[in-house]
Image (tube, rainbow, N blue to C red):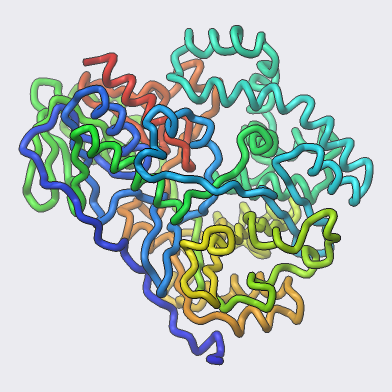
Length: 548
C-alpha cells in the first residue's frame, strides 16, 4: 500500500453542482444565503403564501450543513451530528420527512477520551446506562454526574422551551412561568456569569469529563473553559440526554436538501451561483438585491442569512438610517475562523469498522459493545489546563497542542455514506486551528499531523490506520473563506445567551430586525446561535410575517 506521506492531498472540492432555479425579476421576500437557517426562513415564508427567492453564492445550497462529493466519497462539510434541530419543531412544522428527511439515532451519543491515561466517558441517551458506565471509573464520579443532572435537567428543559420561540421579553417570561414554574431559572441567571470549569467542578465532576464538555461546547465557540460566560455551556451534556443525537440518512446535507425541497413545494425559488454584492436602498427601505455579475432582484423585503458584518458594515455604508448600528459593528473587531476538517477514505478493518483508541478497545462489552465503537463521534480532549493554555496558543497563531478533535466515521452507521464495500469515510474536525496560522497554510501536509496524532492513540501506534488511508483532503480556515465566502474563515455565531436575548441586547441579533423596516437578519449569528438548529430561520420568518 502507498505510504501515507506519498498520497497527495486532494484539493478541497467544491460542492457537487445542483440545479438551481431561475432568478426572478421580483420577489416579495429575498433571502440572502442558502444555509439551513436561510432555507428554513424561506420555507416558512413560502408556506405563508409569499413569493420567495433564496440567493445562494455556491452551486449547491446548504452552507456548512452541506454534504459534498470529494475524494471519491460523500463527505460532510462540518460535523454530522444533529441535536438542536430535532428539538426546534422545525422538522415537524415543515413536514420535512415528506421532503425526504430521515434520521438515524446515534446511541451511544458520545465517546470521550484524553491524550494520556484518562478514563473513557461514554454518554448514552439513557441516564441510567451512562451512570452505570461512569461507576466503573468510581462511584464518586457517577454521584457527581447525578448531582449535576439534578440541577441541569430543569434548566436544560427551560433552555429548549425558550430558545425554540421568538425571544421577546413577554414570551420568554411566559415560558419560564408557564412551563417550568421558575424551575431552572436560577441556573440561567447564575451559570452565564461563570466559567464552564467553575460550574462543573462545583459538582465534583473530574477534569476529564470537564474537558470533554468543553470540547463539544465552548471550544466550538472559540473560548477556553475558564472564560467568564462559558458556564451556560455546561448544559450541553444534559440537553443531549433530553434530545438525543441523530444523523440524516445521506449525510448532514439531507437536511438543507429537504428544506430546499419544501421551499420549492410551496412555490419558492432557490437560486444557486448567485453571489450577492450589495443591496439597493432608497427612501429608507431596501428596494433590490444586487448580484456580483450585475443582475438584480427587486424585493418587498430582504432577509440576510449570511454574516451580518458584511451587510451592516459593507453594504449599508451610505445609509443614514443605519449609521449608528453600522458604526457599532465597524468599531468591533472581526473574528477569525479557527476550525479545520480532515476527511479520509480508509479501508475497513477486520471487524468492518475503523480502528479506535486503545482505551476504547479495552472497555468491557457491558460498558461499550464492540458494535458501537464507530457509531458516535469520538471526542479527544486535552486536560482543562492544556485547553486554557491552548487559548493563548490560538491567539498567537498556533494550532493548539495537543489538539481537540471530533472524530467520526459516518459511513458505519449510514451505509449510504459508504464509499466502497470495503472502505469507510473517516473525518477529523480539528478545533482551534487559526486562520492566521503562523507560517501560513501553504503546507497541506500540516493536516497529516492531526491524523497521525489521532492514530497514535490506537493499537500498534496507529500504523494499521495510517496504512489504510486511500485518499484524503483537508479544509482549513482559508478554504472555508474561499469556498463558502466566510470572512477570514469565520462561521458567525450568536455571541450572547438566553438572558441577553431576554433583555434585548444587540436587538438586531436577538429580534432579527434592523433600522430599515423591511430588512431582517437570520442565521447562526442571530439567536439562538450557530450549529444545526433552524430556530433562527423560523423565528426570523415569524418576525417578517408580523411586520408585513
